[in-house]
Length: 289
Image (cartoon, rainbow, N blue to C red; front, side, top):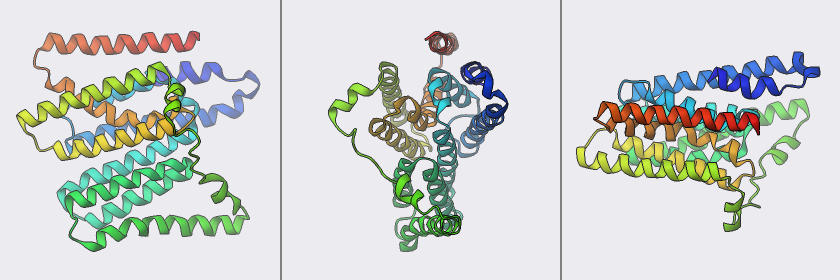
């Protein structure tokens, strides 16, 4: 992933601004590496995949397939906090400290929305998880609003002191200009193929899960909801190649589960080799574009 980022970002730097841009580019790279590490820890601790590195591998490969995501720093930061929020929500399966985890997830999603306003849509996952695990406790339904209120009060106070009250009105616009069937034409062929292949993978994984059973079915449904929300946000947004970053973690989880379900070692190795080759080819096309 470091190689993908260096080739895509550092070689495109303006030579006159290298000294100013490199520290920020390194911060972006650090954030991406932190996301990969967080994903590895998440899938291991919450057992949404088996104990292997397939999830991390597909996460890195998908970042290589969509190198344009490196150009939108705010979406990268937003996705980092969304990833942490999903981790907290998946950990609710233990039914321990449920209220704290709901509050933490809501807080993280609100922080993500400070970088990209549509990240607030992921609050829907919080309510879905509450409904699945502890719907009878009425207080749980109020906690997400407390998380939103906490961030709003803190941000409002900071903006008030700094005299930047226009930020809230300018940032949270939730423009719906591209919501139409014609907006499908704005989605690139690569993004469309990626979405269809991922949906096919999701279908196969759920089909096999229903036949074999497994304790991670509910968690995978939560991950799938995150993927759907990412697709919807990508449809509404103009920068589809960058907003697709929200779908990469869920897609990587399902791809990892699909690879794990393949029993024939040679077939598994062939598919992994093909995925790596396709990523390298697509990344090469990007550099020469």
